[in-house]
Image (tube, rainbow, N blue to C red):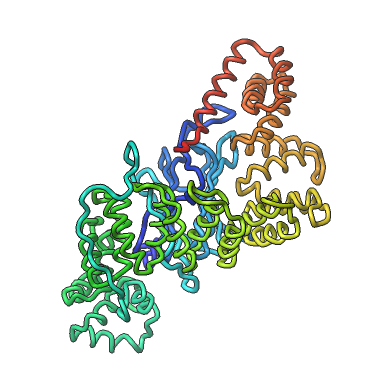
Length: 575
């Protein structure tokens, strides 16, 4: 199946996309479960963002090809892994590029385990799924009408050195290559877009011009062969033509050969060293995209030695010339203190430059910085709201939900539920789980909207099915109490379990309390004791004391081992 070879094989910048720097990272651990050990696990999830698509790479302990389902209202792709537990806690990875909003991973069912991966989007998407070693790779192309610029790629963290970070990159990086404005010279992606728009009537003239040796025509024809729109796809021919154009020092051809080499397009395997050389040739002619790609390669260290100093040098060259991807990455490096001393002023400078060019993740991270400032800067709620609103205006549902939280919590003032409902409603309309949960709470409590428990339940269900733990807990309580929903102990247990597995203390207590009612079942007694111990709420001790009277010493020891196993599997590395 080759649904997206046109887009997904042609990649300018493809690196691991990480959540905003203000969000703590997660560390995979031993899976925790209320039942026996799972037969398989879903582990690391990497998001590779390209200008015209997104690739989701899911590491699994046992090779498995999930069946993908495309759902609407809201639009999303859903991939279930039956028999697979999720290593670590649930994850929510913001993307906010093109129509793709975020990727979520959660334990949808605990016993037997089912892990669910959801790709949330603003419109219907197609996908291509394949197995690559011990990974499931899902390739998603952006529709032609909504291409995403290459302006939001986040590099993987640059390796930190022990001891005091230097004020400037250490080592002896290669002398900088001057990067100048490209002027009217076309780049690889602008030419790819033109090649896809070619009409049949244009083809003969293009072929004739290419036959005469014109480098622009050679490059255009090569990319037409790659795209396979008017011509049968032929990457070998595309490479031959690109080499003829590159021999004439045509910048877009050099960029394209760098892309092909980095990703192994039309080749038996990627050749990163060759990609680096092609990118450097294009950068010498003024390609800011190529300079940024070089920086990303040095930051990533895949196929070439990782070199943080070189990455910073190349990012800076491109950033100072106005390249938004480089500006964003440079801002993150200063904010995170990666291979260079943290510098709040420089972080703000470069994130602002990228945000002002409508880079959504930059606006989000900048807003987060103003809410939770670095040492040396002051919190500024107004600036945070400004940049969250900017991201929201650019289509970020996550920004809308965060704005809802800001106004609902009344940060630095009284809660403004009118504004909170406004933003929650916008986010919920895009299918954002935090917006659905926030709006559901407003309907449940009557915060600037009439109390409407049925609407609250509908919103909680939508958010819970996307892994939102608060919604799962509130939904469980509704089913347990029969308020806003028919009383249903089975559904109450189901949703308590989902939220408890994500570490919500009240849900752990609720689950333990319900399980403790079935004193005839050894497994329920052990599980109840485990969850009540994990909950650590003040009510737990009374229930634990009472439950312990009906349990043997062996059962209590088993429950305590399960507590240790759960905690081990849900540790978060906050370094």
